[in-house]
Image 1 (cartoon, rainbow, N blue to C red):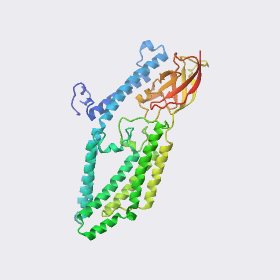
Image 2: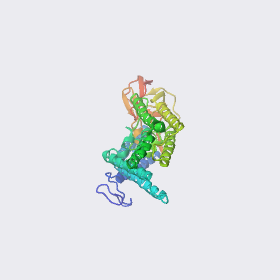
Image 3: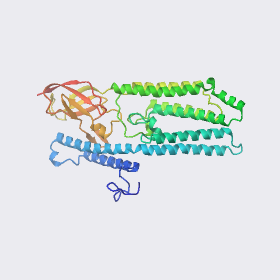
Image 4: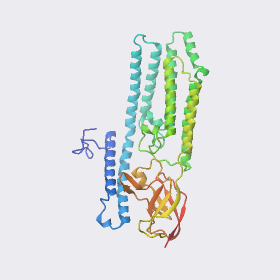
Length: 425
């Protein structure tokens, strides 16, 4: 769609003719990019003290609320464009996955052809290439059946629309074992006689293939336990989950906030190394299942335990530690009254993945029976309010004087325990 104009959403002069129709992957991506640029420009303008109507300039509270409302509206538009981009992901992922799988089959064919020069074509080369083609056909069929969910990658995407590290590792081991079994099956099909078949079947012995089966069981068990552990902790409120717009490859090595995760990275790297060892053993002797040393199985199991331990201790409920009256420089010390700003100090107010403008705008403080949206306070490059540890909100005039409970409700829907303050008349 690049280089063409669409009715009602096509390119304008000066934009290079980029499609912004929102109906194709490129148009959705361009629309999201344009919305992000507009939001950043608006935020930077407000952070520099420009753009506030002259009628509100005399009141700091009114100006702050107006700026917050304008940024919230822009953030909602940005979230809509991000959702549109995420909705276009399945079609692109299905196409790219199928192309990547067949590219690997072609690479294997070229490698087999180049290494066959001089030694000739063998039954092992036929078996490995046929097994790869069968797996590629299976991946293409899965991509077509799951075309609305992302093709062959659909089973690897969690409920939070992120690629699951544990599912990806388990799927890699399932694919490796299937490839080894299919290779052996082709060998059996082309074996010249019963003696050759008996020799091939001896490669299926439990002692020889026990390590491979054990590491497959470890990978699948870690995936199931990680899913159950995360689901249980989300339901109990011990983990805050914010859905992503779309899956990304970085999800395999990062947490929900996009920061690098040690537990995820070590799990991926250890299993990638053991998987590479397995494929090398299979390439050296495709007539039998690769025998894995038990020390590698133990290494993969320890890596899985570390990954699960990281899942068990990650996250936590938001908590209020203290609430104080926000005092401007030069103000006298005074009790909290309606109309005053209060500063809520604690932890977990902005859960991982909620650092987007729309996520920040959905943070709410309940003061008594009044729900107060946390105002967005822009600063160059980001926001000063809200943050993960500090929120600043005004006490509305509808709050009755006396003891009042304060609670913070995060973008993930988690709510803190009540913290009681005294509001003076």
